[in-house]
Image (spheres, rainbow, N blue to C red):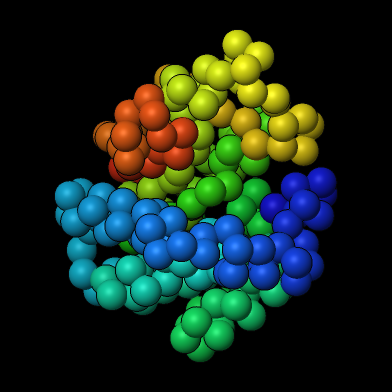
Length: 213
């Protein structure tokens, strides 16, 4: 993440928020890891593969991903990486931006991007992030986003809930995400939410396919 987005999540305060307050209940902390584990299992992610968690945040997904293979964790916030180190990941920590991933094409069997895309309010940034996630994968991409068809997003459109403004989070449609991933070379094969229409947080699974010559 760079520029305004990078500054939004810079410093130790953001790491403390995510590691101690944002997901402080056991139920909240387990929700995303459980969904990621289910999607990896259901889509045949092979054990022993190389996984990228970008951005890794406070390492909430590290345990699930390390169970399946070797893990590389990337974040623009150095304090987030220190949190990942404290959580037991001694190697594979990289400081960098999802908008310009410092890896070669097709470096990872699975790329996971959790709780980033709904921070990208500009279409150009969203497209760039999707292209980068697909570029470095040679198999699956798992990414979460806020579904514009959910009840919380509808409340914003109806004026029953305030929009978060130019630095806040924003929902996107499944159709838009499907088009962006298909254009990048990884068609979406599934969308999955905790509860469709009720839960705003939704995961997609995209599968990298070779481009025609």
